[in-house]
Length: 139
Image (cartoon, rainbow, N blue to C red; front, side, top):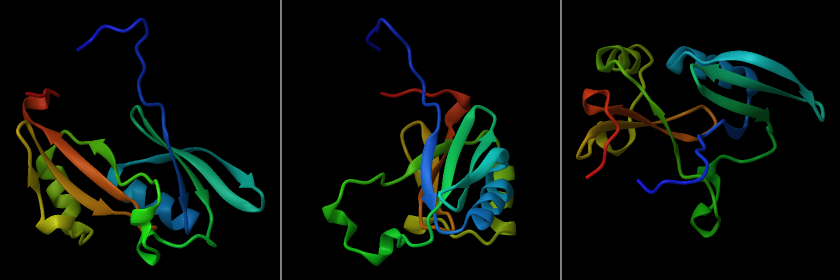
């Protein structure tokens, strides 16, 4: 890795969602996120959800359509974001208990990790990554 003068890390991901309460419930149930701040902006609920060092800022925008409603290939967008897990058995139990059906036929194996792609209630795709031996490595 090339040395930089500064080191940065991802602080949060900001999402518009179709239903704030449903989103808070889903991310809490599936990934353990908790609301740490919330309010009303322009008449709609918003909040910051946190799980460990990961944060999501969510803003309810029910007038927006889901990604599947349009030909989104013509627009810049976030295709998915990734959340790292550490317990395969607990994750597979979560998949079963919540009847989540991972995209692409199930788990995807990469050279040093395994991933599942699930979709939240608004239509955002989340890559759930489990690194071999808890070590993030490439090559």
